[in-house]
Image (cartoon, rainbow, N blue to C red; front, side):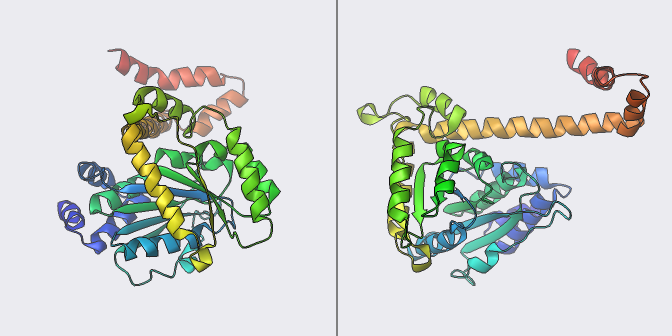
Length: 340
């Protein structure tokens, strides 16, 4: 285990791949690995790319990674794939659409299964970002499944969130109102050479003008605004106006403009103190998630010791007890321990 961490920190890609596999499989010892890597993180710029299926996310990520490499940066890409509800396996189709950087060892690409996560991001994804950050990647790009409004989990992982919208699809633009409009720091109308692009840009502009002042990172963003205070010139973390960028990713058009906007948002986070606040919100969310996972595990173990869930369900079905009483009985040992 120690050698694996040391090899990763020494820049060996084979060790990075093994660590992410261990993380994804939740293999024994993965927690120790992530804990040891934590002290070496905090330098990577984490970019989230989300949007509806067919918006061109993978193609844009491929071109962005290639341009970052031309600029001398190293890149890690995590593409979240839809997982089968039956086998849990991932489709892995994004590998096909990310061909520009094949053979370049400084673009580390990894496809991971969503594993049924409603937010499109599994807890393992956050740990994989930690591994890429500790490895020393300058940029880590996380591409989501593209399941729509449930993609909001990405704000817990990314410094900057880009939302892609294909042109000429009024339904997609309307869908943004239902959820992910609030999480976008940058909006991208990809495939801007198609009919309807101008109308989509106009629709987005009108929606952003009427966007809630709750903050571009939702409820936690509100806390961020209050805590981050003001930067130079009285600028606050609430002042960011999400720009709209037009791209034709398959021809690399607009990629430079997109990267410039990402840089602008990164500078803005530094000026206003927003980056530090984001990190605090991110770690708070991660701690809460881990506590829930571990608590669920303890409760499952206690259920097993008491004969298993089916036995309790049988008792409830026979009207020998009720669900509230079952929960009180199962949790009683935990409450006694916490009250000591």
